[in-house]
Image 1 (cartoon, one colour):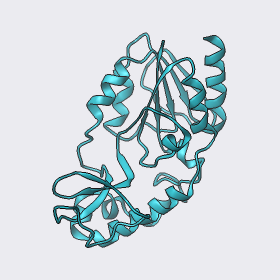
Image 2 (tube, rainbow, N blue to C red):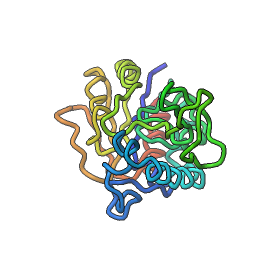
Image 3 (cartoon, rainbow, N blue to C red):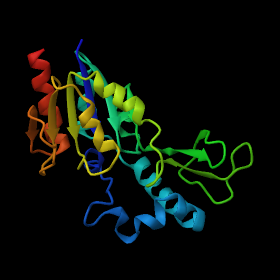
Image 4 (cartoon, rainbow, N blue to C red):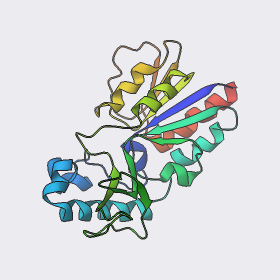
Amino acid sequence: MQHVVIFSGAGISAESGLKTFRDSDGLWENYKIAEVATPEAFESNPQLVLEFYNMRRKQVLEAKPNRAHLSILELEKKFKVQVITQNIDDLHERAGSKNVLHLHGEILKARSTNTHLTYPIKGYEIKHGDLCENGHQLRPDVVWFGEHVPNMDKAEKLCEKADILIVIGTSLNVYPAANLIECVANTCKIYLIDPNDVPLWKRKNVIHLKQKAAEGLPLLIKELLEKN
């Protein structure tokens, strides 16, 4: 059975109504990244950071998986499928995908600032003063700018096994995640689904489908299933 790795970014979640900080009218527009998405921001103004992620978490809970998320289940009928996502939402899981690796954490979980253990969040809020079982402040379980990406090694190993790589909804401008495309074998067939031009360096075996995720991914999956 062939291995398919789906590497997803903000574009797939945007079609479920979740805006990104790269959108001109995006959620992050009124916030500087340095104010809400760095360890230094949390140290200097934890209240602001917690409120920002509470707002994002509420939006995630209200969002629903779209056709792109749901179509991946069809692919699992004939391929061994692994999703690697830069997204911190749970839309892949809610769509039914069984193998999902989050590079940048999961917004629906809280993490202890001291032990780094994670906990499910009741409702959508983490408040200043919410403590882990060992008495330490809880923070969002997300990877902020400047922090180590703990799942990178695992993601690289998964990409090394890929026969097919589908890159969808990512500008490939966020590192180190963008380096994953360099981990696949030269024989790996790469599909890029994005309405915009995305630099994939000088890979010769890239097929670029200039479509949005919810349109392009179901069509590509249908084609792959028919071929196999």
